[in-house]
Image 1 (cartoon, rainbow, N blue to C red):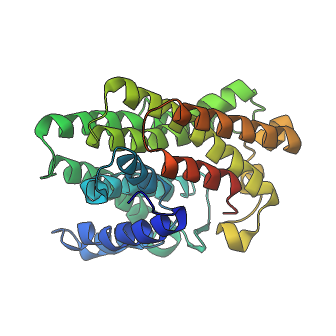
Image 2: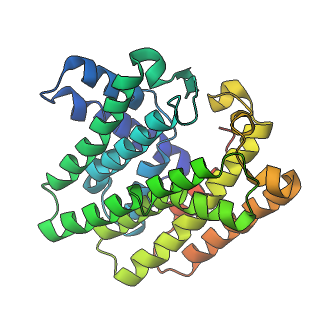
Length: 295
């Protein structure tokens, strides 16, 4: 495990997550139309960054990957639900996601809403049913993940993002939105890996700080790609943020300053890792990957 390269890790573990995700839906006693809509967005792929962060954190504590597969899949379900709802006409009104028609374009708006609801609630059923960890750890995971995904976290960030449309926000206001909209679910992926790895509260908190910087870097890179990216590569229309009249880092700071801000948060994330006595190799390489990605 110590000699695993980043590409080997991503290829191997992304396959593990991709293979496992549909099985959590296939065996449900639920309407086939609902299961089909839920599976559609799960099977659409993606970087699986949140599961990879959780598993890389387990690696940092010398724990086996299989200990985190179920929680990693649960967090990816929450992320997928948020994308389905984000794409709806009442939200961002997007036609493409990961190069495919968005869920509501295939199954209709009502079914897309219900598919997102199903993924969110199923995620907590998975965590509460874990057999590999004790009940106290389950409760801690549920508390952390529900807070990160809920009104104090991702959902609150989505509301602030919605209310910020049509306004030119300050950098501080935009950063606060993305701390919650993107950063909290990334942070709790790392924190969940640390909890499963039996890290101390202090280390869990330090890794959360690392992940918050990484989350901001990820969002700034997204904003840059929305201007400079290739539609076929990023899997959605270029310029969609500008079309929705959203504040972005390039729009507020200019492109060069946005790129400087990206490097600041990448450096801050790395500094957090260097200060911890863990095997941070994979987490460090993922940080580099976030800054260099093209989609």
